[in-house]
Length: 283
View 1: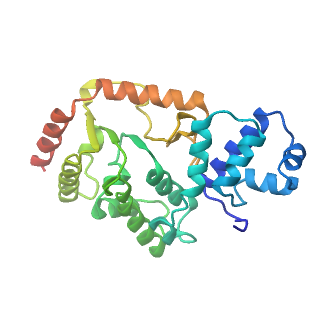
View 2 (view 1 turned 180 degrees about the vertical axis):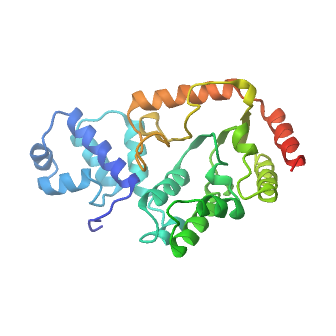
View 3 (view 1 turned 135 degrees about the vertical axis):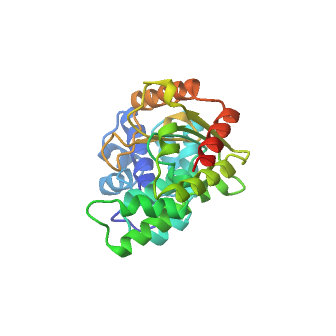
């Protein structure tokens, strides 16, 4: 596969993990190149995600680096094999790469944990709700990009709706459930849409009521994607630099603990649906 000038976040992550394996083995790029019968430029390009690599090559690299973590090796090899030309590719060169990377992350996740404080989660936004959000942008978006962002947003549900969809756990604050984005009718339809989503076997929704007060992570929304092995988990939080995916275990641990606490204080799913229906009936 030829090099790519703009590797996706997934390609960059694979390359970063291969770099970690090399560094754990105490090898320089020159030493690794000698072991693998290649040159240091190929090693550097592969670790930057710019150079394609096959599952067989990943296994050879892991062997050369004396990696014995078979679960990790299998997961990295699978990342190479899962070259899905997903629906998000239609938006390449149209939307910022972060939009595509989030959609790809959700598609390949083995489990999703999401918290949202102000808005409905992107995976379940209706078209009218998404339009109202993007219309509020300052400065106003160019019309073509506005339409592309709306279309991309409403297609993100595909990661949750497909037959082999991963478990999806949402914690949504009551503030998001009551904020009249687009007006009362748009919000009512959005709440009805959210209730329908909760009927899926893989979807669990819990609401944090206003009465819960302060709690860890109350100032941000979190998207936590579980991978085949915990080392490859990824998080994205809106308090972090835009488009910055978090991989460091210390940060991942913090987000897991925050999500755990949010789920602990949130209403159980049944009472959450009661709250959502009650709010909808008032609109």
